Image (cartoon, rainbow, N blue to C red; front, side, top):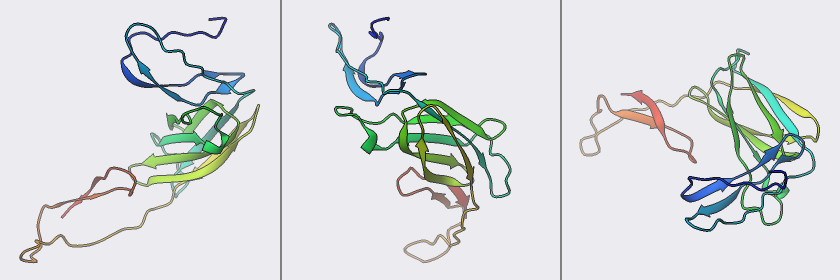
Amino acid sequence: GSDGAFELEGLSGYVQLAASHPDRGTSLAKRAVATGGSGTELRLVLGEGSGGLSGIVVDEDGVPMVGAQVGFEPDLDAALPGAALPVIIGDWTHEDGRFLFPVLRPGPGRWTVRTARHGRVAGEALVERDETTDLQIRLSRGNSIQGVVRDEATGAPVEQARVSVGPLDDQSSPGAMS
């Protein structure tokens, strides 16, 4: 409303809330418990002004990557006192390989890009107040790993074993069959 008040209905359990405004930026997220009966008062503080982040994701040959998952997380050093965690913004690249986060809190942060072929890559960006920072993210070919799956007891090669791969901080994903 005109007084900044809000009410979200139909929620249960733990939720994460954030607010944004084109002229005031994005708040940091706060966790809350949605309970029955009386509501929980929660203050979401917006900064002064906002900036944006846009860019294009291309493969090793300069071809735009369609459907790459892109994320941006403000640095914790930029967090406001009392804020629980930064808002992690996400998007997918469009047919031209581009993405856009039009309203972000100004300051430093970390971007990530994930694709099935290239895995996860990350870097840093600075969001400037009243500007849209434009990135060109070029993905490179990954390295390969070769090996043989063997039976522990006999040492014999195992046919049709599934080999999975994934970053250490993430769940594994299918890789190849032996």
